[in-house]
Length: 129
Image: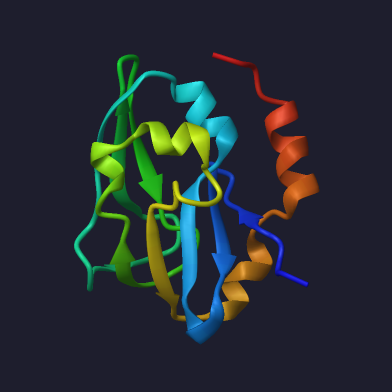
């Protein structure tokens, strides 16, 4: 059985993959709340990030939002096609809409993240745009 997604309170998701790497993306809720995406800035491969630190930006016609690292580690891959195909975020946020892959420093950081039901509770309590 696949490991469930974990979520940060800042609306990023993370999924552990084989080989000690984890895939990070933006939740469907966040993509829907942003609407009309126009620009995305991704980090460089090799950049080191700390949990809770901004590693990129996504811009809509309404606002610019930071993208935060759910765990500390090294960026080992970026979805280079994503900035030119932002519609992928809306169509497939948990698949082809992934943003970066991180090699986590400490897998225990996953324990502090929200599971699906806790995240659903969080977004259910937030007012919509």
